[in-house]
Length: 268
Length: 91
Image 1 (cartoon, rainbow over the protein chains, first blue to last red):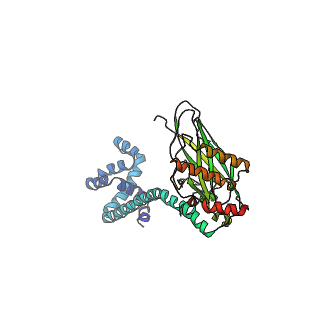
Image 2 (image 1 turned 45 degrees about the vertical axis):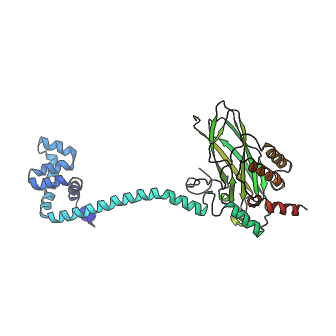
Image 3 (image 1 turned 135 degrees about the vertical axis):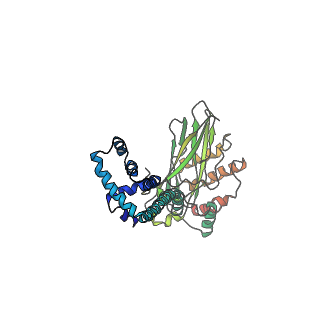
């Protein structure tokens, strides 16, 4: 509401603008009287300041006049000015608060999104609701029989510039949901210095990642290989039998487990 | 970037660590024989995991003996009753 009052006349608005940004100058204007007119205009625009030094130019005269007219109006509506000033100050505070609220929301969005992903398994998040051992025990007592054979293929990647040869020991494993399976990766340090690496994994297709439970593996911890050392890295995983009953998984018979090794600074 | 998800894909979620944690690496190659048996079995049976379960069980037992894995009952890891079921269906 205060904004509409402010924008009623452009001259009025432009004069008000300086009030918002430089309240001290306004008080100066009010106190000084006629001479203050020049100060007031000077605050309005930087180029006009220079012109007032040279005296009253014709170009500027109109600006001065219109401003002085509105200025005169302001003398009369002093009380109203301070009221609108208060309202505009309130508006400013409200808008500033809104900006901070927006920034705060964008910071809060990160953990909120993560929680949303954990709850819904959106985008391939591997979910965690009950531990795998509990799941295995539950299905063992239920006697769930699964019939669909799923091919789990393995993929291994190494970060650029890392001199490791990292390959899966077997190309694929055919497993039924509900059966825990073992798989191996082989890594060899081909350089002449010990290299420490850390790995991360991914399961595709994304929506099947919910049912892929890793019981134990070699990821997320730094693994150090001496020069020329070759080592076998096992992965022990389990596919939830509920995979079979989920209609979204109807066409999925292939899972790809992909590991990528990244180099950790080897100055240790 | 990633195929799944309209927005973000995998960006918002951090990969979840494994249940029982990390396998300590077998630097001294203590369980190499068992591993070799398992891999050979896989190759011979067309990579069918269920046919080679006894070898993977042996491998895990080897690991437990050599302190490369936390000791645990095999049935908890899905081996005990499954193995029995396996033999009954094979016959």
